[in-house]
Image (tube, rainbow, N blue to C red; front, side):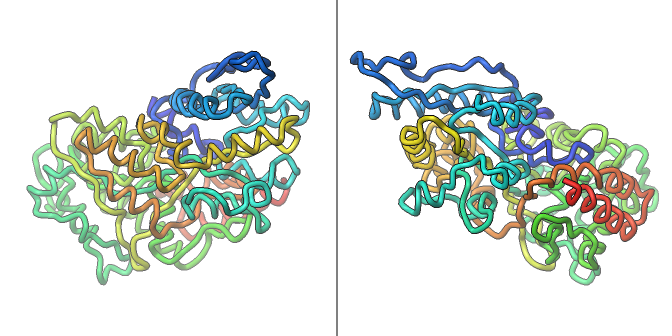
Length: 459
């Protein structure tokens, strides 16, 4: 779900160009390439199958794999609504957010289009979106509460949940079994009092001679297997770690990174990399955000905290070793993940509001999202369709129950706000220096807050 390096950035990569963020996670299992050529899931617009007039509703997104699933879904919708033709158009991620405001201002935007959490707020505030709370009300199939919360602003819901990503702990079962480590019992504690994660990572991290990180002769320069991907990754790593230490990183639309809890959290992560040497060097993961995933596939990483978006790449493991999925790592405040989601929003200036509403209702239904789930394209936002996605992976021998539980469990919110992209872009360099060990944690968090919030308030 975001080739997979490009794919991971597709959904929310615009959040922070300067930070390695897997919030891109929510994109389905193909790259977001493609062109803007629309395709119709039914007959040509203007004519119904029986010769009557049709209303065409356009639907825009950035992912080809999802587009194929939607074509299947809309074919079923059109069979039941022959007076409506849904035309799917794919705009590549590289152009999506540049093209959208231009099309909205010129009246050329689609009737319905995908958004992510970091980009929808500005369109709400500008009056571009249909109020879903007023248009659809409460008479719909159940949706993920976490995704609903993400797209609620000023007391109203502005998007129909389509897909989501949660975070869990992928682990090399072959390595952990050999070391006698149960990943479900691991807990991190910045005070060290109840910390079982660091000792486990030291056991699992080994050099070219087979010496683990507890051995005084351990040579970090020749590390053959690392313990954990403790990198500058909001969705998979530091967001969940912040949440599981009882912290937060936003206060309303502003950043709230600097706090005693967050100083503890980030110091723990930075020390895993630079002091204990049980995580890949920050210089490497900053240069390649998918390095840790590739290391896991190659058997060079024992624990890999990530989301659904990594599943397609992990199929490459084959019979190299046995792997499985556990709940996200537990901290002082428990197990807290980070759920991000994509929503379908209605263009407030649509020329076909009645047909638009019917399509939005379909997009929010279990039936309308089954094609996404059954093809493995995405973990659906309609909760009653999620079992079909679980079944897809079960047929491949992968139990994703931990991811499903995390999707409906306790989670820290994904970034939101109309100018959050500017904030993340401004504070990114401070985080890079912090993870590299060149800027003290407390100083980095303070400077990140200052720079980020100045950018947010400047708009």
